Amino acid sequence: MSDPNKEWPLWEVFVRGKGGLSHRHVGSVHAADAKMALEHARDTYTRRMEGVSIWVLPSAQITASDPADADALFAPAEDKVYRHPTFYKIPDGVTHI
Amino acid sequence: MDALVTYALRLGDDSLVLGQRLSEWCGHAPALEIDLSLANVALDQIGQATHFLALAGALESKGRDADQLAFRRDVMDFTNCLLVEQPNGDFAQTIARQFLFAQYQTLLFAEMARVKDERFAAIAAKALKEVSYHATLASDWVVRLGDGTEESKARMIAGLDWMWRFADELFLMDDVDVAAINAGAGVDKAALTAAWDSRVDAVLVEARLERPPARRAIVGGRSGRHSEHLGHMLSEMQFLQRAYPDAEW
Image 1 (cartoon, rainbow over the protein chains, first blue to last red):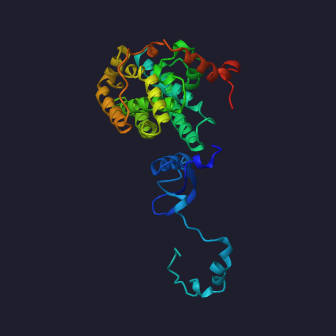
Image 2 (cartoon, rainbow over the protein chains, first blue to last red):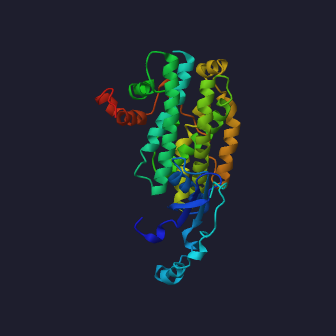
Image 3 (tube, rainbow over the protein chains, first blue to last red):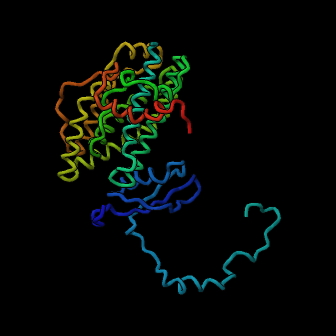
């Protein structure tokens, strides 16, 4: 376990809570291959009936944004309130919105 | 003793002893994820044991519940097959035991889920979903270890070699089995051997392993003739209830 090169690769785990919901990231597992990753994800993250479907993907396949770029990436959206759909009058009869 | 009581006891003891054995891995497995996998299988088995032993106690109607049957019987009163009491050994030996037994349980419960006696059928139907996963999990590991490195292959062969002698006992039929079948609760285990052979062989082929040579089968668990390993296991499992009878938490 001490030699990091001997560890199994890391996989990210996504679980669909129930039909109609999207898969949500719940954590990660170590596994030698995709099938083992699915089994480990099942045994680690769905023990309390959390899911109806599991996705796993190699963590190395994820390209992440750099936190150092956060200002350039996300700050410009801060003053664009007109991008939120808050300027509409909602008809009285519409309940689920 | 009534045959159905014994029949339920055997089923409960198989699951209980295997569940206890597997839970010995807790905190010791080769990886955190495997620790959880083995603990999950152990909990499934202990859940099955709870149902079958509760049923045995109810059929016996002497006021013994599942806990009393699990913790207050001595080793020669246990009726589990010898396979499930075999020591964990290394990970491959544990996988070998799990593989052979899960294939058997899957076939057994698939049949039992269709018997006339609804009490047995209901437990079997619930357990079938659990043991189907155990069979997949164990089979995958047999393939990984068998078709892995030189060391993992050697360990898998040694593990199967240890466990193979105890497989025949799974399918032995005696008066209790026949009486249970006649009562609409039992399964003809002897009729499961062909399907078991072909499932086991298919996995061994995929794992590029030879089927271990046939050897003289070791039997006796059903009538209470156990290996030395079971007594040691029970002394740990039953310690608390023996030292502090009726302790609850």
